[in-house]
Amino acid sequence: SSDPVTGMQHPVCDCGSATLLNDTPPLADDGRSVRCQMNKFDDMIAFLSASDPDFAQVIAVDRRFELFGRAWCVAELAVADKMGMRQSLKLSSRQALSQHRASLEGLQVEKMRASRPEDVLEILSKIPNVPAFNVRLQEMLFGDCGLFNRWADVDFVEQAAEVG
Image (cartoon, rainbow, N blue to C red; front, side, top):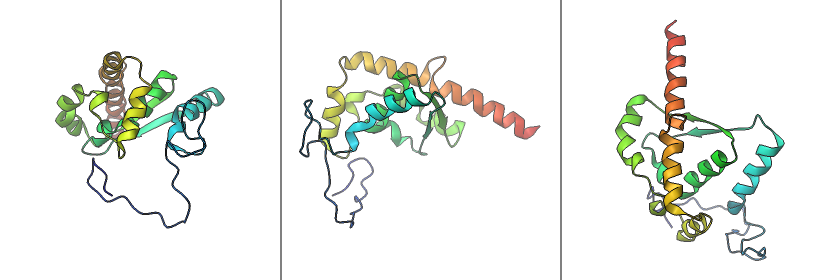
């Protein structure tokens, strides 16, 4: 099958192991698969945040900013932000950000995609108030202390240091 976002064929694993999806038995009381790794991100971020105060999330953004249309990616950014984890962006250029800014300002989690529709439903089921989540997402990205403003500040300092 192909990825609905990129259109690329999913690589086929030839390791012989069974694929463990969100609903693969055995299931926990909340209905999530015990053995699936995809549904453990919130727990892992909480563990890492509590275990190591210096742990940080580095967000490498692709040139077409498709990362922000992927439900799992945005969910992971939001969870790390909620946990107070330090986050930093890696972007190709200010021009790339300018080119994609309008589409980013209209992001809505309910319109994002994942390789499996069930994944989007699982992500949305964890969000008690979708409109409030979308407002917080915009603040996380564009607010005074948002990811893009912090990136622009750091990028400017790095550029100034290179110039001398």
